[in-house]
Length: 333
Ligand code: AHG
Ligand code: MN
Ligand code: MN
Picture 1 (cartoon, protein in one colour):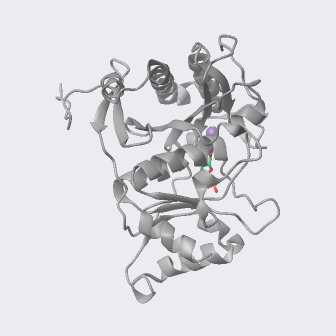
Picture 2: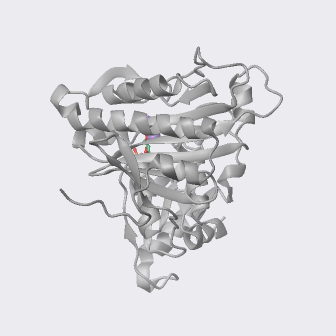
C-alpha cells in the first residue's frame, strides 16, 4: 500500500476544523457536506452501471434538463443537511422553493445554498463534475425563514466549499481567512488535508470562457479576450492558453493550481443579460473561495460579493481568478 503524502501530518478534515476553532454548529455542517460528497462520489463511480448518467426526463426550475444524478445528488445532500437542527433552510439548484427541514429549530442560525451536481452535462461523457456549498448566517432578529430572509443573509457568508469529483475526490474549503484542500480516502470515507493555504497566482496566461458565445460578448469582455488571443503580438505580450471544462468546479479548481481567469459573462442576446450561473450556489461561494485565496471576483466591473440577488435562483455575470487578469478585464468597462 502507498503511504499517504501530507504536508501537515496526517490531518483529517475534522482535525483541521478543530484547529481553526470552528464552532460545533458550523463544523457539523461541513462534516455533513463531506459525508454527502463521499456518498455522491460512490454513486458517480457506479452510475454508468445503472444508466444514472442519463436524463431523468424532467426539466428543473432553470428550464434545464435534469440528469438522474442531479436528483440523486440533491436527495443525498438534503438527507444529510436535514438532520442538523442548526440548519434553518436549504436552497438547492434542483428545486424551485426554499426547503425548510422538519428538524430546523426557530433559532437555527444557518441557511445552506448548494448546487448538488455542477457540470452535470459532463456526466454522459464521464467528465469532471462537482458539488458547491455556501453557508449563510441569518441576520438577527430571526423572522420567518423565507426567501426574503435568505436574500438578507447574503452579506453574512460564513463558509464556502466545493467538491471536485475527478480522478480524485477533492474538497476545497474556506471559512474566510485561508483556503484548504482535502482528498477523500474512499476506504474510510474521510477527507485528509492536502494543502492548508492555497493561493491563486497573481498573474497567469490561461483564460476560461465558452468561446461559442463570442458573437454575444459585450464590448469589455470582447476586448479582454481579443487581447488574450493576440498573444505575444498584442498588448499582453505573451501567449495565452484557453480551457473550458463545462463544469465551473473543474474550471475554478484549475485557478487554484495554475491561476488564470474564469468568465461566464452577460451575453448580448435575449435572456442573456445575467449570463448563466446562479448567484447563491455557484457565483457567491466561488467568489468567497477565490478571494480568500488572494484572487478577485467581479460581476460587470463591481465586486461580485457586493451583488444582491433578486431571487433564490437569480443568475449573475461572473468573472473570477488571478488578480491581474480580473483587474485587466474590469479595466475594459
Ligand atoms: P449545472 O450543471 O449545475 O447546471 O452547471 C453548469 C454550469 C457550470 O458548471 C458551467 O461553467 C457552465 O454551466 C457551462 O455552460 P456551457 O453550457 O456554456 O458550457
Ligand atoms: Mn452548476
Ligand atoms: Mn447542478
